[in-house]
Length: 557
Image 1 (cartoon, one colour):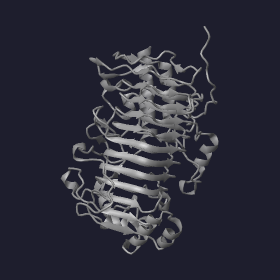
Image 2: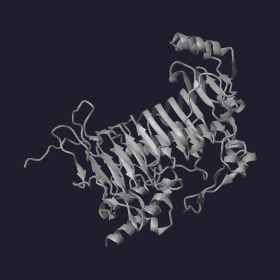
Image 3: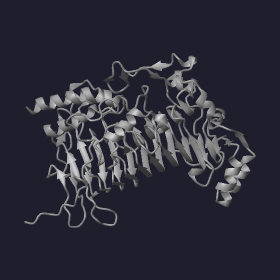
Image 4: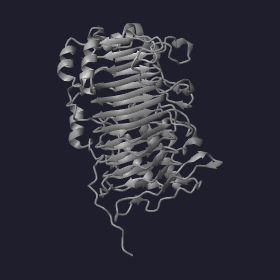
């Protein structure tokens, strides 16, 4: 009966997940860069390696500098740069740039009008499409997948989908996927705060800034908004850095990297995104030997998800705040078409994950989002584009060997953390021997649950929820290491809560465990959520906000 129940759940997840999750991130077949040839770029204040400084300004930049820049040294530097201004639009400067150039953007609003006017389907690129029916290196067969623009499309017609495009591979025909043109570009606002430079999308182009095979890209000190998909996007890029940027009001993602490596997200404010504030998807493949992307000192709030990453491997996220989203953090092996599956080997440490109870799935919000086109929406009214259980701090949906350590997780009304199995068929994997290859070796250690920084109790609905599945690493000969929980604590005089009540310790036990069929099936129906056609799947409770929990005191014996 258990085997039959699991088969039905697997079939349900496999059938339901693909249409809904496939909408999340359509992309061409991509390749991981060779991390050994890259590095996180360093900030540069002078010209190096033959690079130049290209200056971009607007007609009102002088007025903005004189009235809006308060630091006298920064103000004088900007006034001096005015005499060197050679470009009105950032894309024009990018087009003129070579390797190691710095693009200095003076205070102003940059709407990139020439890029806005570029046609979405240029005749010269009409045949430059590829399909993702076979994702290289994964064994996934996504038969019937829609054609997507190739890299050649992006290089030849950079503004069909992007307001600003940095495409670094000048010789895509050689298939080495490496940057040889427009590498190590640095684009920075020159004001004394990121509010001085606004890069504004038109709610029509998919991406405001796209860095594609643009190794060494460094973006710094500006505000960006209004993409139809990603405000900032790094793809197949070896070495990138997003620093001191506010990204807001994207229909889908504020910051996104995909099959990229040697990356750093830092000092970011990411908010009001329909999917995620920060999204390190298809992360670096190191399989627990290294962390290729670091996320630190980010504040991600008022999104559907603060942090997410399908196949978010090799990510180290620490000292961030994920709060006031529908869900704080998620990682998964759920959405199809992502290299690097199944997800493994992320570490989340010393983060504040709290108050993720923003119910964006209410009937009122559903109706508003269905009747209101994106371009007409109030930017403060987020319309979700992906399904999550509202009121969750951290969700691991089919992940392996992740570390959740030393975080403070509180006031999430459904659960502090959730961990469940996702069948391989849900991601398009057709090898039946891999069906149970997720949900093993996840360690949740030394977290402070349901307690605020001042020590007062502010409970989660449950501190820990688990479907009781332990997958396997190399079936059938080597069972996977047990999922485990150890040394977690809560407020004084309050007890930790979990389902199941007893959780396995981190003692190195290795065992395959099939999970609780009722729990597994309770998650399966939620996969059929669709923002237009199925906003309340029968039998799914993810989209109803639970009541605020009260502290549970230890029972007297």
